Length: 87
Image 1 (cartoon, rainbow, N blue to C red):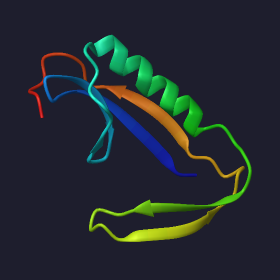
Image 2 (cartoon, rainbow, N blue to C red):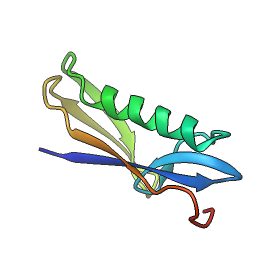
Image 3 (tube, rainbow, N blue to C red):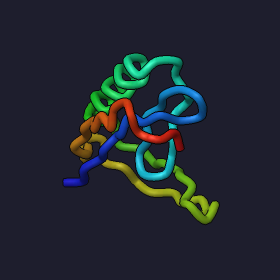
């Protein structure tokens, strides 16, 4: 099973969650970013209908894959917390 980790970090003058090198929108408070990350992590684990998905990799190349609606990753939130340098 795939595992997805969302990290809550300082970003762009506020707070955001990120997965890998991809950041969410910026939130005014740590609490808001943490709550949003928890919602996204929970939604990531909800099964649905099988469908074709498209995504863009780090090189800007688009890919299309079949996604089995029941094949959901394990998702968690890692709270990096306050006191870290902004990125």
